[in-house]
Structures are given as C-alpha cells and as structure tokens.
Amino acid sequence: QVQLVESGGGLVQPGGSLRLSCAASGSIFSINAMAWYRQAPGKQRELVAFIATGGSTRYADSVKGRFTISRDNAKNTVYLQMNSLKPEDTAVYYCYATIVTVTTGAPYWGQGTQVTVSS
Image 1 (cartoon, one colour):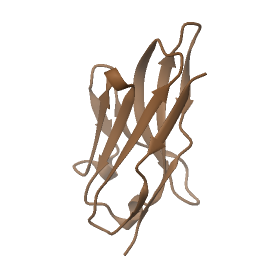
Image 2 (image 1 turned 60 degrees about the vertical axis):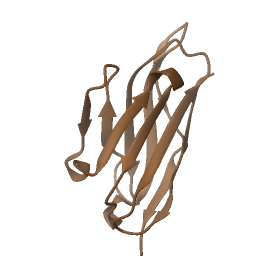
Image 3 (image 1 turned 90 degrees about the vertical axis):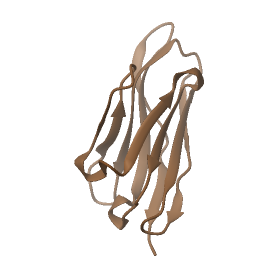
Image 4 (image 1 turned 180 degrees about the horizontal axis):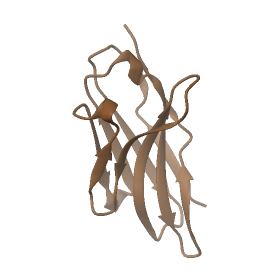
C-alpha cells in the first residue's frame, strides 16, 4: 500500500511564505516524476510545479519566480516552497507522484492540503 501524505498548508497573509511537504511511504521501489497541483473553488485542477527524477523542473507561469519545487530522493519526499503569496494562490494543493512498486507502476495523489492567502 502506497500513500502520499502532505503537510504544511495553512493561512498566510499576502506576501508571506509557506513550505509544503509530501512524503511517500509503503512498498516503493522507485519514484519517477513528482509534482504539485492545486484546485481553487469552482476551477479545474491545474499543474503548479513538476520535478523529474533527475531534478529538472517546470512551473506554471503564474508561480514562476515565486515557487520552488525540490525533492529528497532518500526521504521519498517532495517540497514546494511558496514565497510572495497572493490571494489568487488560495487553493487545495495536491501532491502527485508516479511510483514503481515491486508489482507495478502507477500515479498516486495525496489527500490535499488547504492554502489560504488572506489578510
């Protein structure tokens, strides 16, 4: 059984910072791509940031220069450092990973963590 567990969400004022973490656990052989998505009320889920196994990254235009995705392969963990937060960053943030077990490879999602940017 593979699980992704997120932490680090919360309420922050505009201009503030938060760091999200997502740890994968279970019978993991390897983890390929990892990413963060978000979904605001009434909107579709969108890709925020992506990091490949080798460390290459890409970001949504709306967060470039403000957010940084990183990963610790030894800890099976992906992070999202969010700086200069804006009210429009308010959303539920979901961790995503493609995980290979001894039997198969499949995409997995975390349960989501709420980020609210408001004064």
